Image (cartoon, rainbow, N blue to C red; front, side, top):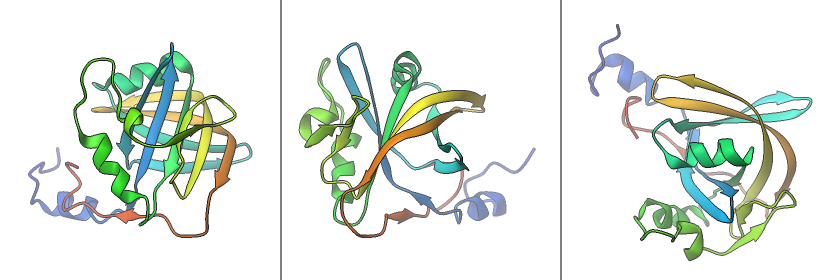
Length: 161
């Protein structure tokens, strides 16, 4: 087993893997949820496929599995301030998505109106590993809303957010 302390050489090296910053959304039974995701990657060209890692203890994973869909709103410098809304706790029946401007994608998912771009995905697989589940999705719709570059994030160590 690798030394799992947050200041170990492995943890520091893992922290140098750059990640993007995304708002991952889903909708099921008229309830919309969103969270800040950073473990996202394109994993296929034909068909275009992406994956997102979701903590196995999060209700978001249940919603994604139940709906069979998820969307990614890709953040840039201008829209990264919206992340703060998704770190707050809200009363029962209220969602962070109630506090940001959204539009519905063609697949019926909320995407952030101020995002750099968005992707709407159909779930095609799920793999549980450690404390996360990796959800794979075929991209069915997407749009770049303006020119720009996504925000890139580095963690202090690769063992925590």
